[in-house]
Length: 378
Ligand SMILES: C[S@@+](CC[C@H](N)C(=O)[O-])C[C@H]1O[C@@H](n2cnc3c(N)ncnc32)[C@H](O)[C@@H]1O
Image (cartoon, rainbow, N blue to C red; front, side, top):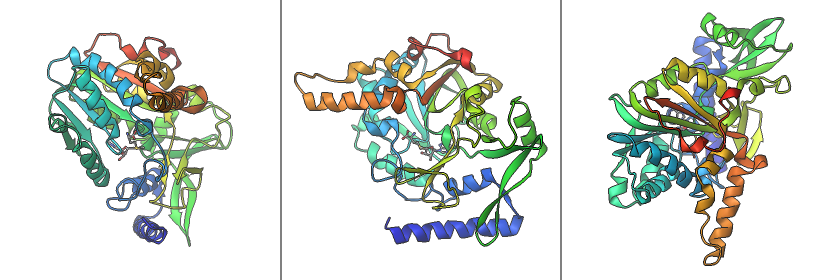
């Protein structure tokens, strides 16, 4: 979109949010984030704005190349081969690149699922995914089906999401005078933050975490994490749920040094902390509290089976086996090595990104945690 169109787009969304505030009074930060990202037709993820890749605002692991998807395919293959009528359900598939590369690799591994469902809340992204996946050979593209609600029938298989949990709206709290205050958004010649009282149910969610915090400490949590996970996995009969995202276990997440929280915005590859700027045309995201995710899994009847860094997970799955042949095709070998470094080096995505896996009625040890499983950290 040209700059002037982007500005118009942002102004239109700002008006929708402002009108909402004048009708109902101030809104919670979670509601503000939800509208900024998902307001139909206008939110960052709901509109036609270019988000992914070098012309967008950020690059995700599947967008770097095919190594991430090829490695994950081996993990999926292990599960798929041991189940009856297995399916894959990918949440928030971005440009569809992961599904594209994964299906090609699963065919090589002789492990195609019966269906590859994509649960995508953004109509724009669904359209982009469909355009890309149509390029696949017909017998592969025919496996893909889009849904906008969790699967309503029982299923066996793999549920997978890369960088989706970090895009779920968060509540922001401040610990002040021995109390937790809720960040809210109001309008007074511009959007302004105010601190108010949490409704009892939300307050309980924070208190249950038993955090020891200093005066003025600010951070976040996802208010609907349990119900969201439950809605997606309640019909899973036998299988595995895998989330990859940036984040920490709880002790590190609410560490005293992280006293301003983890909320961050991305606009044209620049990080910033001004969520009242570029509303609807910049990404807004918070790191993931993996302990909260583990607790959510527990409350949904899922077993928490694995937790490790992206580097360990991909190395366990043999990412190094996909580099190619340095003698015959040095260029692609070099590009693949660069990609592998980006995905696995500690100062790149290797340690910031973690992988958590849940199982339901599935007993085999998951290959992805062979080198390291740090469940004790959760
Ligand atoms: C940062 S993008 C990641 C995209 C992709 N997985 C990748 O790695 O490139 C976040 C994605 O999550 C989707 N999303 C957000 N909330 C969702 C939800 N509740 N259920 C499913 N997808 C969701 C967005 O529409 C978008 O496709």
